[in-house]
Amino acid sequence: MREGDMLEVQQKGGKIILIPKTLVNCTPVQKLTEHEQNILVAAKEKIAKINNDIIHSRGLNTAEIRVAVKAGLIDHEQAYWWHENWQKGKREAGKNIVAGRVSRLHDTIEDTLKKLRS
Image 1 (cartoon, rainbow, N blue to C red):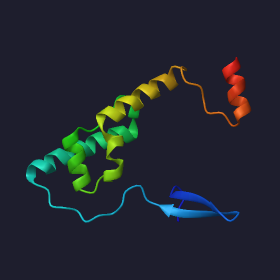
Image 2 (cartoon, helix red, strand yellow):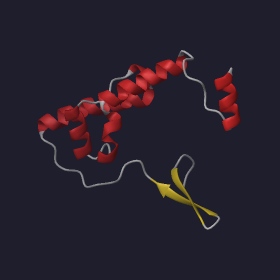
Image 3 (cartoon, rainbow, N blue to C red):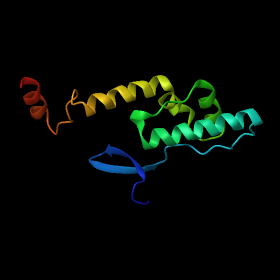
């Protein structure tokens, strides 16, 4: 384990269990056609932009997602997250947070209720 690794946390019998996790399952990479390789280049660029600036980036289209999954770049169970429809919602949420239209997370339910009453 290294700093920044993902963990799943479970509670069992009064104990906390930490399980190392990965974001993408490793699968054998399938051979891509030349056309798919070109699509993959565009998908990689979009993924890098999303990771660097989610508010000003565009999500992947269906063909890019299909090729990125086939190449093992993204997990098929997480493919929806990279799609432009999902990213559009993420951009809108980010803009609302920046504009102050969404309140911050609260530490306790009492803090949340206090904010709602103000």
